Image 1 (cartoon, rainbow, N blue to C red):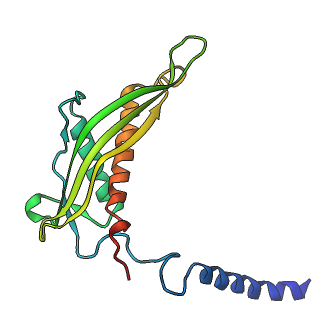
Image 2 (image 1 turned 120 degrees about the vertical axis):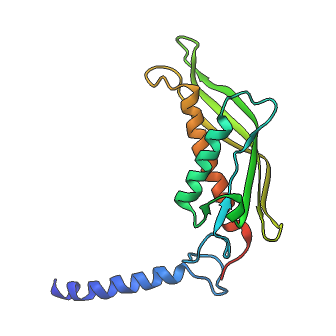
Image 3 (image 1 turned 180 degrees about the vertical axis):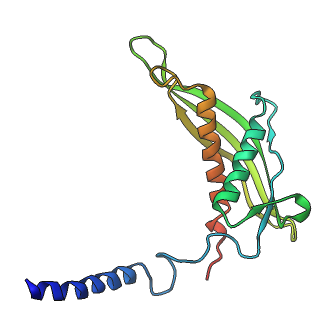
Length: 183
């Protein structure tokens, strides 16, 4: 019993070393890294209010979306949102379309049981110092579901808020690691 207790710390240390070694590759690519996911040299982003396409009739949806994106950038990235005059980069976008469809019906009442709201977006992130386009997406679709029937009684606006939060998360993800930099 006592011998097992003396060997246990050594086995735990060996396991930790082997686990860390499994996270690294010989060429230094892949695995885990402590490097930032964000572009070096960029600290600030200007994010003016996004626009709505001519067939998008939801009032103030572009203001709500812009607020969600600004909040997400400030909360979960290395960037700080500031005015265009002080920014390194500019993030602009538009809501090109919003669709809503029923995913399932209540067989007893025929009422919608589960609904989906999908946003079709275009956005562009560019470096104001160089004019380089850092990210550009067209036809970027983000969808969310909501439950309009009892007992949940969620309305379109609840589904919309979930979708706006998801859009903000996905847009900020696009500002992350696909830029090809690294150590």
